[in-house]
Image (cartoon, rainbow, N blue to C red; front, top):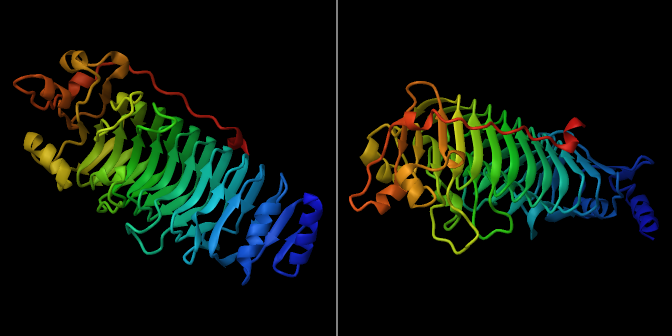
Length: 412
């Protein structure tokens, strides 16, 4: 019955800017009733279908969703096929994907009231040569996330542009096996964010004019936590000095303006071969989760963080108020290029240093500046503890590098 109904509907729509061929390619062009046409195409698509969106401006009034496996949605280019949700009346995101083996390529999603493109519970999804943007620029009333894959496996983000998100432009959360590459995030609060995820490679991207360039977080009170095994490398992280415009209460609202790369509460994160230039507060910040929480299974301490072979220039001269208040009295200006809050797991680690597998390891070029704020040691010693700016204490420890992430769809 589904196939018969689909045939009838597609036939009816042939004169309404939609056509289908025997190879299950559904071709769609802009029209006055494009909302209904796209909804029908997404609902009636069969597994193996390709939905081709012609060049043009698609004005949509409601969110779209896809729940059919093995479907491709292909546009004519992110600057040619534009889905505008500026007048969206219902739905919390522009496009919601809940099916497996989905490929999205060559179109833009603009001005959604919520998230631009969300995929939830998906196994194998590709976001390629897309653009997600709020065209009015940074604004706390913009949607939270540009790309928002959550609880996914095998996520490929390649050649995406993300602008204006009030949380993160490119975000991957509670997922496993992730590649983010060749993409550009600008004028978001967080440019690129990997949160509560396992096995991620973030490389060959540009993060510019965000509040914070690239974030690797682990958060409490989520089904998947204990984020680990993330590599951040070969990225250009430049001029991330936009004032934080996250709505009040969001955790990214704590990200200091002028942060290049921030690692918070994650385990086994390798940051290398990045160019990190011109940040008002700090090039690389390593910290524990900064708020109270009620989750007995959560560990807020970053562990096994390895920084090496990065280029860091021009940072720390005009720090955000929190960095100025907490760090400047101990270090003066400019703030050191690498700042670690010194949070460790327990009294023993505070007094004698963490175990080798849980330490902070740094092998950067001579002259790189660093401070360990000794947050835990300062709390447990009756006389307190001074910040430590000796980077050599962290540079002579072997730390195994992480393995590259491999994805099944990456050979297509």
